[in-house]
Length: 225
Ligand SMILES: [Zn+2]
Image 1 (cartoon, helix red, strand yellow):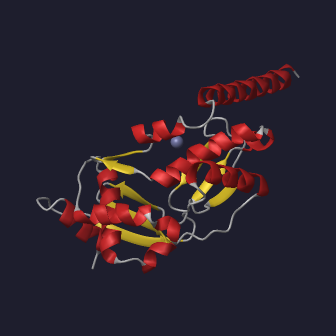
Image 2 (cartoon, rainbow, N blue to C red; image 1 turned 135 degrees about the horizontal axis):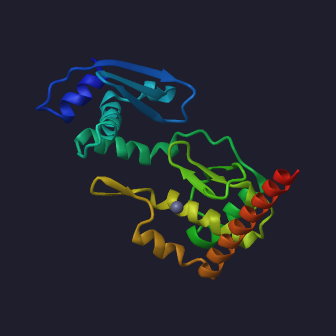
């Protein structure tokens, strides 16, 4: 079965399929990641190697999800629903290999305080010294990544970032219509349970502003030389 063609036909039953296709598996993509490219009448789909062992019906959902993106269309099929369900549970099979003592201590504090120690530990890692994306949660690899800017932050601040990302893991994404909503009302309400939440938000903004100022100063210093 040509999976790309099958996915397309089920997704757009009225339309003619006039594309050449290429489906490849590779190791470079992150756990259960995938992408699609379209060049005129050629469609190429790349899947992370882990997809190889997964049922075709779920793969069709994934490819349909990618087709909607590449054709800028909206839609919902039973296969797409299967795929979303699968991804919501991908953390169960994602290998847990990364951790760090500072992040782990923070995770444990938050797990005890807000989740009665019921949240399964994801991978925990430091990212780059990013001041735009301070922290993130990747559903596919079950990984929380935190900007190294927070390596020296006081625990209360780091905890707040961790709590935010743990909420993502806990609430997953809710399928509201065709768009995933990550920061739902439920999410924002849960976030407010963090002690002095507004103060923490302001402190984080201050850290970002400081960092940007330092960067600008460095730049102008070297510019002057
Ligand atoms: Zn978020």
